[in-house]
Length: 294
Ligand SMILES: [Zn+2]
Image 1 (cartoon, rainbow, N blue to C red):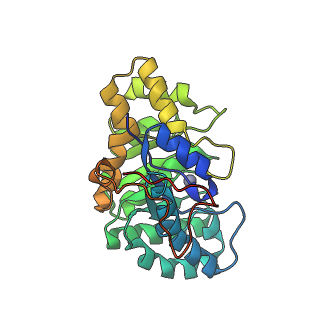
Image 2: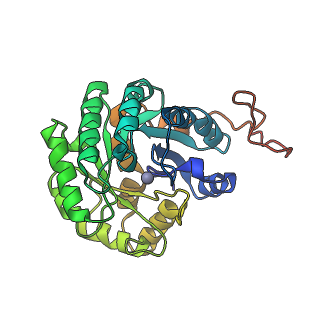
């Protein structure tokens, strides 16, 4: 079965992860722009990071047979450094227009501060201008209030629910998100409440419509195989295959396909892997035999 991980920070992962993901059926990933675990201090580091998402990381994924897309945005934590955030805002339109950029994101609230609100709203306006969907990061604290507020603000700015993916849902938030017509994404972190088992029950209860499964794997404790593992568990627990395909593959294409930048033909008829290829003179290999598919 083909699956997509529509929220994973591959820049923080290894080539072993790419190999394991491809072997488990992951055909495409979406890498949202986010923070690095510590605050950036210069606009140039944002610029180089965004450039790596559309450049090197896209190349690196392809070397292991995975299509790589990204979202561009100023994350909520770093919105709190307002002088720097203002400079980042000036960069965003340039990167949002690049090939493979499927949304503005991940944006939203972390601590629900006035600065976060200001830059969230500014980026919703940008999404409308450039005609891209939006990926919302909902806060881990005060989740229910933060999720409602995020949707309210999207509507205030004239976005339509089907243009917005609300991520990091749980059993407390899912009903409101679906009732209001937004896409409801779920992050499966290992050893936490919203694990694979709970996800199976969410799909059993709410059905597959507008539900999306992702790993949000990054440099923290996380699992880059969360989506294929959840798909497998759903099958074992009797969820119909069509519903597994919807939640672990097709819904992500429908939501982010609104960008015009991601389509099934990208991986159904992929270029053959040739690890002799270089990007800016650099290879993914360190003296190993290159993999060359016919
Ligand atoms: Zn993330």
